[in-house]
Image (cartoon, rainbow, N blue to C red):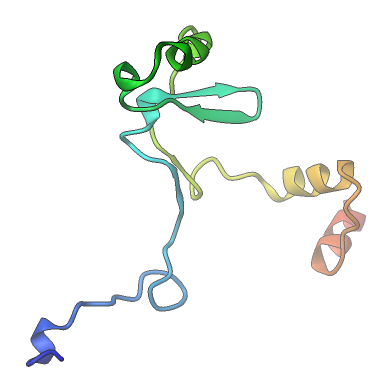
Amino acid sequence: MLASNNLAPANPTIGLKPGEALYEELVTEDEAPRTVRLGDTYIIRPSMMDMLPDDTRERYAVYDSLPRLMRPLRSDQDLMEDEEVRSMLWSAGVELQGPMVAQARAQ
């Protein structure tokens, strides 16, 4: 039990709800230089490649020539526009409902 409220950890409200984050960090600043993109997939290479067995390092070698990320990836950056989301869902066969249907029909 804490002797004083001054020692209690702070729990600030960040997002819409107490303790909720405003974004998710998908690739950290430390991981970005080790991360390559292959199609729609991001591959984060291990930080200590020299400690891996030779056969494992050889498997990762195929990614050596691919460009690395220049910055972290966060869920609040490079967002899709509403029309891009509708188009992606429509092409995947997802049936739109509610306000999105009205907007899609109006266009």
